Amino acid sequence: MDRFTRRSSLVRFGGLFLVAAGLDRASSGYAAIETGAVQCVLTPELTEGPYYIAGEKLRRDIRDGHRGTLLTLRLKVLDASTCAPIKGAAVDIWHADAAGVYSGFGEGAGSRTFMRGIQKTNRDGLALFTTVYPGWYPGRAVHIHVKVHVGGSVVHTGQLFFPDAVTAKAYRVPPYSSRPGPQTTNARDAIFVNGGKRSMLNLTKNGSGYIGAISMGVHR
Image 1 (cartoon, rainbow, N blue to C red):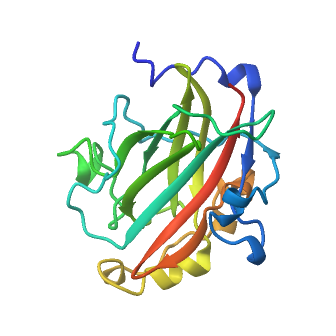
Image 2: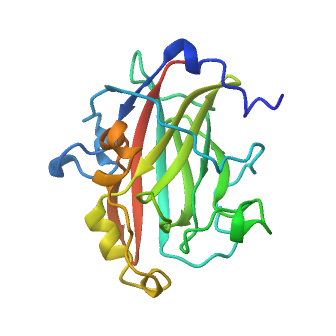
């Protein structure tokens, strides 16, 4: 079995420590991570969802030419016992495009790659992705799926969320503005209410796009 799809540690640990980058306005953005102004907080695993495809590509830019507002993700993986960065962890993400479509399913069945990819963390525990602000689809708040693999085992399966107010602003421009606003807010999302507050990306404006940052503490 591909080492990026094994998940032997999920039952053993039953949860993870998640460190949200920038827990208040004074430590906004990923500067909170770089300066050490973070706290490890216990939070439950969140569901993988129905749109996972194993064996995604090892790459940073996962857009495949799809339109949308630029989103740069800075996802940091830490050892939950020490908060030290973990080098070489594989961070696996997937999400809907601006139209709310997943590759490999429904309208996106003609491709199995857009908005999907894996990156290895550097010596600072940081994995970087270039993507677009996700679109919404019925029944769910805006989100990104994530898995973290360390030493061939899945040590975290979760979802990353976006502040509703930021999403409202992001959706005022094309191609998002061609659709009505999201039907489901975070507070009404069945997954978000089970731990989503601790899985919220810290978003900062970067030109016409955004930077989204979070740190995830895991047990090796």
